[in-house]
Length: 123
Image 1: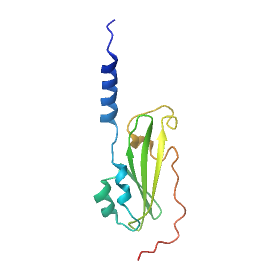
Image 2: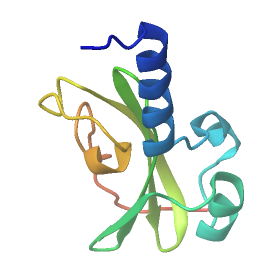
Image 3: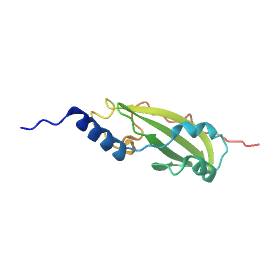
Image 4: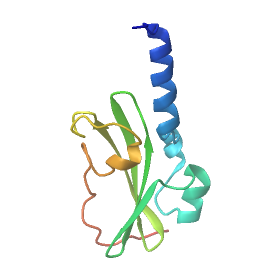
C-alpha cells in the first residue's frame, strides 16, 4: 500500500473545508446600528445565509465556518428596522461531531433570542 505524505492530506483537508465552508466577514458588523433598514444592512453585510420570520420580527443569520467552531451573527428586524444583533458560536460538540457549511447549524450552540420587543422608537 502506498503512503500519502501528511502535508498533502492536510492541504486537501484545508482546501475542502475552505471551499465547503462559508466565510462571511462578521467583523464589519460594528458598522451596524439600531434603526438601519434591511437594505442598509445588506449593503454592509451582504445577503444573509438564512432569514426567518416569527410574528413581526425578521431574523437574518450570517456565519463564518471555523475549524473547531463556527461563528454566527443574528440580526433582528422589527417593521423593517434593525433592533438587535447577537453573536453566537457553535462548536463541533454542539453538532454531534458533524461538520460542513455553518449554514446547517443556525440557532445551535449558545444561540438565544433577544428579550421581548415591546416598542421601538427612532429619533
